[in-house]
Image 1 (cartoon, rainbow, N blue to C red):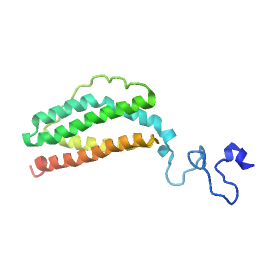
Image 2: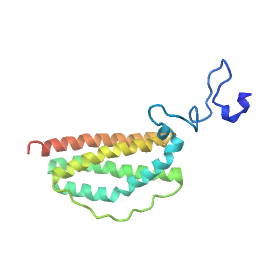
Image 3: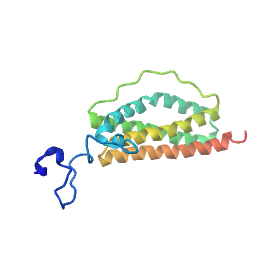
Image 4: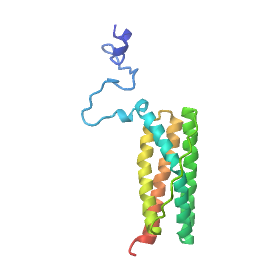
Length: 181
């Protein structure tokens, strides 16, 4: 009898293993004991993930100007590090654009131009870049929640692990240039 009742599909017949046909037990009515977990369920997280992808891609132009500035003031022996970070960021933009297009069938609309604010100095720029990378990791983790399809999750994992790598590089540059000065 329970097998024919759609609302009861997550309750197994007596003596058998549970078979879940819904995203999680109790769907969509769940009482949270410690922390709300709906944000981790892809069906709920996808709209926010798509908005965060748009937001991330729209920040590209300002990031481009920021990296160009840092390259112009960096010591010559540090430019390769910044160039590798900038090139990864360009790749991330292309990957996010492709992912967004595959999921929605639409291009991400162009962002309005925003004026670029130069950092006070090279160390201030490095600090801003470091905390920007860490904020990106948190944003990309929220994007990851919205996707179940493994190839998309792999793309997002590549992007956020690059951001962690960038944070380490910015820490290195900060230590070289800004500690004990």
